[in-house]
Amino acid sequence: NRGSMNRHVGETRMNEASSRSHSIFRMVIESKDKKAEGVRIAELNMVDLAGSERQSQTQATGARLKEGANINKSLLTLGNVIAKLSVG
Image 1 (cartoon, rainbow, N blue to C red):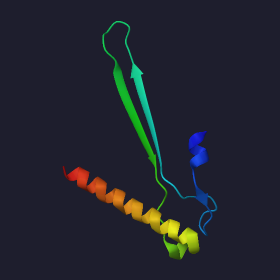
Image 2: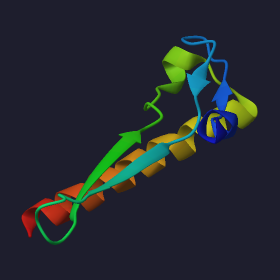
Image 3: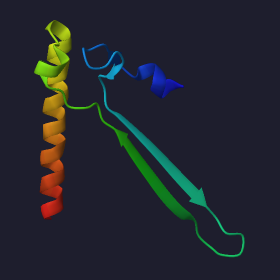
Image 4: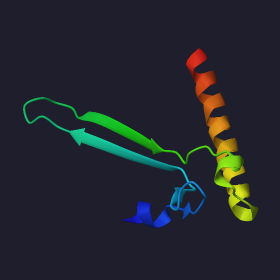
């Protein structure tokens, strides 16, 4: 499928197929009861995040090290956004 084809993986000391990308899956379901008017809509959102990494454990260098730093930065940013949204 298209999602799997776009998934990026790379080898590290800890994992030979380490996820190097984030994925968002969104499903919208619409249903209509034959007896009732209107349409019911349900949404399901699933997020698969690349895991945070410690360079000392992965022994990453070069491009793999830069990827790990970017993954960690994006996870930190996401955490900050969630914290701000939860405050109201």
